[in-house]
Picture 1 (cartoon, helix red, strand yellow):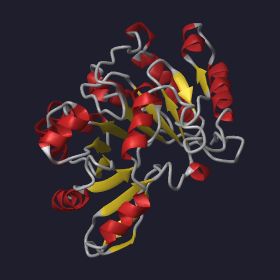
Picture 2: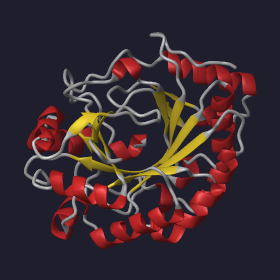
Picture 3: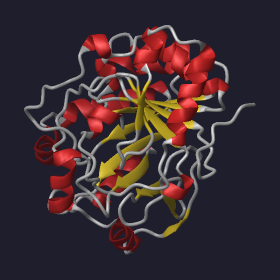
Picture 4: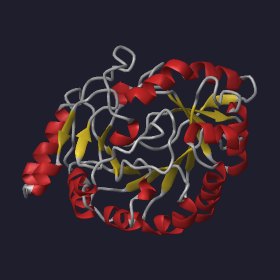
Amino acid sequence: MAQLTDRFGRHIQYVRLSVTDQCDLRCFYCMPRGFKDFEEPEHWLTFDEITRVIGAFGRLGVQRVRVTGGEPLVRKNLPDLVSRLAGLEGINDISLSTNATRMRKHAGELKAAGVARINVSLDSLKPEVFRQVTGGKLEKVLDGLMAAKAAGFAPIKINMVAMKGVNDGEFEDMVEFCLEHDFTLRFIETMPMGDTGRHASQDHYLNLQDVKTRLARRFDLVPGVMPGGGPARYMQVAGTDLRIGFITPISQHFCETCNRVRLSVDGTIYTCLGQEHNLELRPLLRAGCSDDELFDAIQRAVDLKPERHEFSDRPEKVLRFMSMTGG
């Protein structure tokens, strides 16, 4: 089988596919509350174009696809796209990142279409704090989570951005919540992406090494592992099935093992969250490129992948918001 490899010997096996840059929440570290400068719909890759690109990635050795946004369930007929991706050569794992506000309606059809597991953003279990962070209603997310659990997604991972002065009093409560519902928990450090991310990092950054030390005072943490292609380093609560992941782009970067690229809604391949290296596929696709030309473009994009991000050294470098890149 073909294998995509970057200049530093890393094998690319994982594509994070953004199907929209729009979202029905406004997390303050991701997107400004009044932001409306979304990509024009005519610039979105069509389902046919997405299927062709992901099919090319699959034939080049990519095995995992994570469907992201913005909020991916804002995109109409998403289960139809998932079903098409699930049938592609080489693609054997399809997952979804969501805020779960629309999961109650779509959980069953997404599971039937081929989504095996989901990640859900949930930064607080307190309605007032959740509203402060997102501008939305916690109840809709909790309803969506329970619908996802009933539909049989496994694992369900809760992603909690750890923020000083915002939700730092809730870490133990979130562990207990995940123990109760058999969810996996992952803590994430704030990242300086765009003005929103930079302000969040300046005002609310927490080193997850300190969070881990704090949790170890209450819970018996032992080394753990979790299958998948993501960047989390896991601990496990002894005597339980709960795994707690720590995603540490700032305090302990994981660039040496990065095996992923991102495909934005407009067909741009981004090779690193913390760099601006990218290659636009949409012009090639709409000019009628051949499969060989598409394969060549994907390899050229992968060749642009830097050795590591520069969040710590040059936090002002990345101008785009997280929602513009794909989670």
